[in-house]
Image 1 (cartoon, helix red, strand yellow):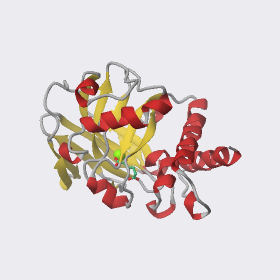
Image 2: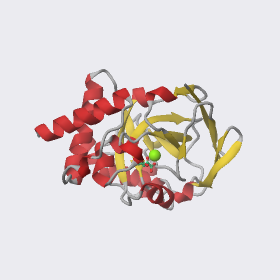
Image 3: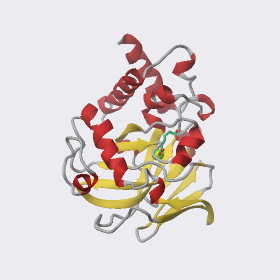
Image 4: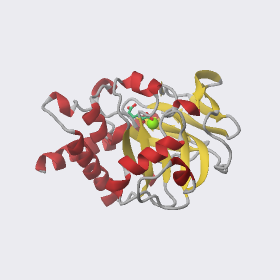
Length: 255
Ligand code: OOG
Ligand code: MG
């Protein structure tokens, strides 16, 4: 327990001061359950500082993402209000160790999800969907980690930006998307890359994250996971993701 609490402090301090740390798994074995306990305690420190839990991020739900980081299990993390970046504004490079950005689909829940559900049942709990981007910033040196490391580090989550909300009644299982940096396409893909259909990511969130969080709450945002590999951000980058029929979401990186 003391080990878990001290690891939670290490990872929280690393995030707070944008300082890279060595991987926990390099100094001894770390199990997945312990890693989620470290994540819970590190985010609890943020909540104790006044941040509010606003949702869940799913991770490694596409092959492109699994391949990029060399981990192939679906993982999840916690989103707080302080991680939200207003769409169309800026993010400061100085707040991060080595930030990357990736195109995601966001769900807004209108009803709580407190048990495992089928995809149609989960869809009935969705108020709206939106194009989104997640800023991931592994606190581990060189952005390298094993499964338990990344889980302990809140699954690399660091920021997120959400575009315009649309009704979930439209079919969003296979929407084309393009992520551009300064007008140049850097990643292209489809929402179908997310577990074959992003609604499956919400089903997975209910199953994997729900039990630890007392369910997923009405009003929460659930990020479905990167549809493509992530792009390493540089100062001056204007990043925009457009999703077929859903509009676009953008952010600019400043010093
Ligand atoms: C791990 C987090 C993965 C996603 O959308 O797949 C993730 C990482 O890539 O550092 O956020
Ligand atoms: Mg992500």
